[in-house]
Image 1: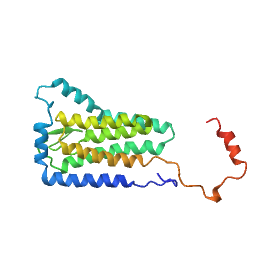
Image 2: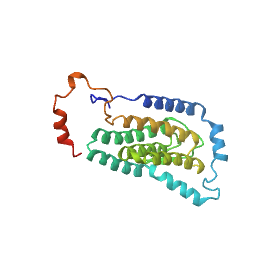
Image 3: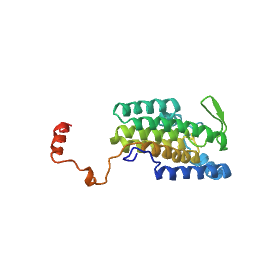
Length: 226
């Protein structure tokens, strides 16, 4: 958010979005059969039916906050805290990003044929596609909004996002291209929502805006207890 209150799409959002579009086109055109087949055969040791039910359950637990309802509740709660803190544009931006993520996921699953994915069920619909990983998108949005509320948790949340991606891969929950697509889409939406945050100006004040003599003492007396 600029100093004059206008919203501008950050360049990072455009780059993440462009990368996602490129990957989506490539998935539709090539399906990355060799990569996805290799992952299914060699990178999913705890997938169902491979003899590690407890590890698979643990991986599912790590991923579970990214489910639609759970993630909606977390994002709504964090947005509510931002609202009570007076950060209302941020409070509106993150739920909007979540809604955009749901629409993007459904549209992509309808248009992009990610074969070898089996049948994906959600939102009362059935899609024979798994691109992108909606769980990955929503996990990144959760990390973004929670870190906006509690910035000190950012390193932990980043580590959690990495762990979620790894769990989805080793458990066979998603194909590699699904996960990468979810990361790209999630980062595009998260950077767009984060841009609603009002940042303090780093430019020096103009001479015409300098306070009159004595104003600094008055302001100090007013806000000195903050």
